[in-house]
Image (cartoon, rainbow, N blue to C red; front, side, top):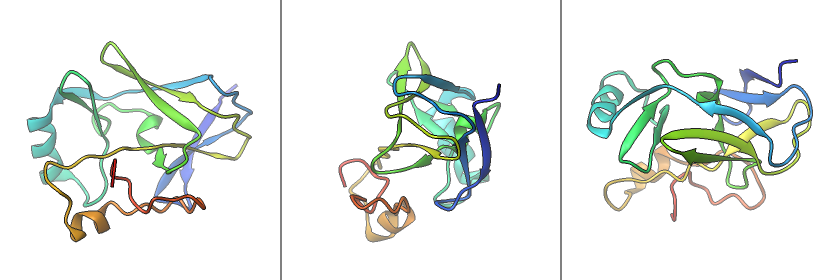
Length: 145
């Protein structure tokens, strides 16, 4: 039985939703796509990307997974300040696990923890504003901001 579905999200664009109950700790799916250097990913994003919208997932080894190339449903996971899922990197692969019990129809979220090369300007902060709506929302998808 299929566990997740991608459909329109009230938070932003598309989102990933549970079709059946998912238990805390359960592996949901792997974040897939083409692994490349950050330099190539940034060039591709500037050329093809939509402002404030990216399918890039940074890896500990300094490379990046570009979910827009060969990616799966995981690329549609939206950000929430208090997320019900987490991304766990293992040997250059990224797995999405539930951190709490998730009911059918509930949207799955991860905390993006985005970073910028320099101190973020007001324009950058606006570009990465959070829309999660949680009562403890930090107002941004940027890490430590």
